[in-house]
Image 1 (spheres, rainbow, N blue to C red):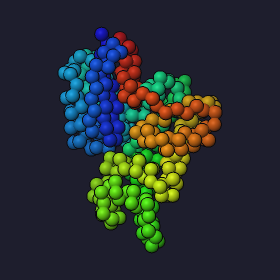
Image 2 (image 1 turned 30 degrees about the vertical axis):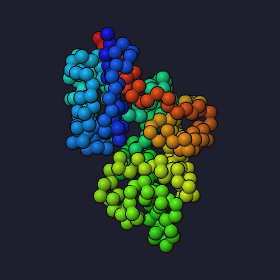
Image 3 (image 1 turned 120 degrees about the horizontal axis):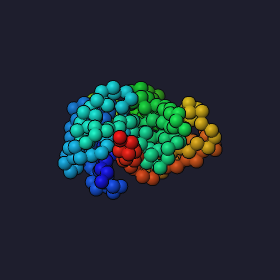
Length: 297
């Protein structure tokens, strides 16, 4: 019997699947165990919570794969995950990748471009052995088009309107209502007191659905930013026309942003087929863990 564990560690949520001989026998979900997004203490608590929801695993697994947001920017992430996951295996076989690297295997592809958009954003791809990535630098330095970026852009628009003596209009109402703030001053204060991305990315759908004209512009900007990531990965891969593109992440469940991003990618890479990921990214972690288990001597 082959037993593997796959983990998808996003900036807001962590999901796990335990698979035995190709059958999912247990699943678990917890808060983000990303060292970058959640910080060391919260990440450790979240991973402990997640593993505690699964059957006792120590030494029983053939391999584990974890795709983690921020693994590129947080140099201690790999050591943190390996130290906690290796004891679950009989072989010590643990594969650590960034979360976007789960998308293509989850789609059943070995080559192509993956774009992930949730709390953060990033693109990565592979083409016959060549690999490339773009973005994924975190909410302070990048994550263009992401949920956090969308909400921050909306707040900036409201502050610009305030500076110009213009009313906040529908955009203000949409954002204040969902954030539970009485006015823009209270909203701005909350943003500075709790700037962590998961506190704000959850409001992105409310911005995207807002009837204010600025919301439509923010949607277009986000879609273009995500298409730019895909284009840059394609350029770095020197991939031929027609390389497939897979869109994934929590915000790709928003029909408006998905449609806008698909159109933007199709315009930038006109020969490519663009699809939304059907299976959850954790399925990609399981497939990578299975591949690692097969490669063991």
